[in-house]
Length: 577
Ligand code: ADP
Image 1: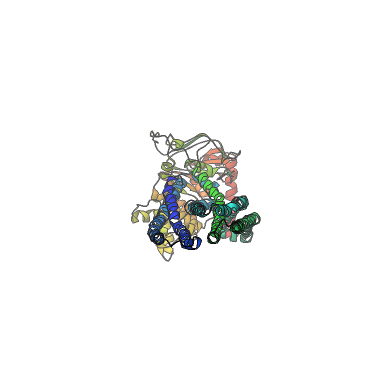
Image 2 (image 1 turned 90 degrees about the vertical axis):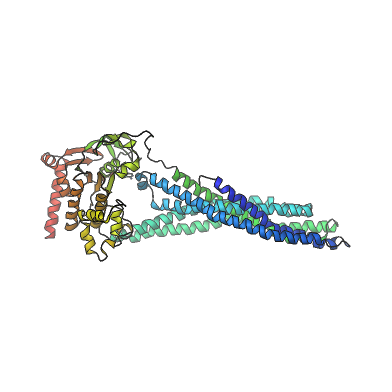
């Protein structure tokens, strides 16, 4: 999590705890040895002092184990959880600093899976798996030393199978690690598809696509099932062979033991002790490899976290204060912009958007209207040319400052799962209830609240799903009015609104434009006709610019657009009669 030293203390304590936990096994070996002494060496007396010492060591171990386990528990619960919390918060901070454009390129499911699952995987591996593996390694080494102390030849026989089995275990678990990459990818895909399916269910149902989309969700679940099975199958043949080879170690001990017994080079009790203890050594080694195979998973999760942390942020202005803007007029000077591919979304756009007025952007879908609005709020920086606000280059101002002075009323505006009032208050959390009511009144949101049973306290539902499109925009307008920012970006709903919503929104928007710089991505004739300035965009270029009066007089894109729209509106009115 960018601070590996935080883990050192935990891993060291875990290792100490493992050693303390291993003490009873060692004491048992020693005690067994002491108890068999009178049989191995007839006439020798039982060493009671040593046996009582074993009891004392066991008693001390209980206390020591309590202390070390408690410390490990505290460190793992508090320490690791704190480390992960800090790391997640740092990621949250990073996500906040990323340009808004980043979110248009990335799936919510991918980000969600990094924040929740990848951190958990790395946490689990770093804190638990790695230290458990260390514990097994410590116990095995300690057992080897103790066994060698009693009979080095039998100890050698006990561990002889380990180097033979290791390559198979390694290969088996490596295959498992590799296929776990597929599993992670499949489970990420599942979560993305699920989020997409649930978030878009209303649209999917409306267009009768729920079945088609469910097919892609079903396919991702199917792939998840295959990937889970694949992980097990990948490791089975070699891994199982390696495990069998390792467990054959007991036979090797028996073989070596019998040979030594026949040569009278070892006492039967020593062999018995080895047979009893040796078997317990192999299973943890298999577990150790199982843990190590998780490395690929944790490594991939760590890399995904690092990749997200390395996402480029918009450059922040240098330490010396950037030129303060004079006023809130916006100017595009020969701006070209592309979203990353070869195609340019904007080409050599020059446009002056004066303050205190409404500038309407008009043009076919995909002509670059939203891109102009988003560059004005520094969602991105242009690759060529400059965007200035009050004469100061936007690229030299902190993105947060620019956003602080801008309100966004987009058609896909996001409402939080709170009440109407809370959603308006998000515009300026320290606003008084009177200010909230006033903003809501101008946006004609009070009419909406009055109609609803719970009034202002009506929950809007996740994303505002309990309100209509027009009502959602009224909430967004009220929010923008409350924020009272000098710049407002307004994206009119393309869908036809009912007459009441349309009248309310047009009225509220004019109120907004009175003393602010408003850039509207306009679709409705009433908005366009009332604009102080209209810019017509086609294929990323501004082809016409002026007031409605000027533009309808000259032949061109705007005039034909206006006529088409008027005819469409006439048709709508006629069909409504
Ligand atoms: P409009 O608002 O006029 O419909 P946009 O400004 O949204 O047009 O889009 C202009 C061009 O940029 C289109 O060709 C569109 O496909 C492309 N575009 C828009 N947003 C993105 C994005 N996030 N990533 C890549 N291309 C985009």
